[in-house]
Image (cartoon, rainbow, N blue to C red; front, side, top):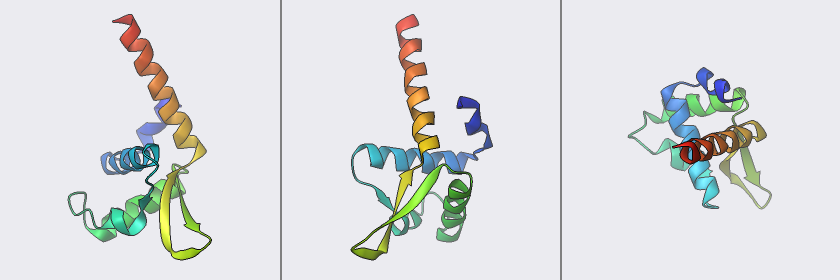
Length: 97
């Protein structure tokens, strides 16, 4: 499972980590908000990277039933498992040190 991240580009991994961080804070990242982050890349490039993450089953794009315009980025089950395994590996490494 940890090897699965090899298929991600550096930009995709950075986006995935941002989405995970916001989700852990119970503040899901919106697609439009993500595309405005110029430090990552142009909006078109960010959108392509988000599509790639979705196609690779790392993220899901969800809409609130009462607000169809806002699209939120959330981790897929695959990504949640990936971060859980990373957490366990880090804990073991710290205990071994």
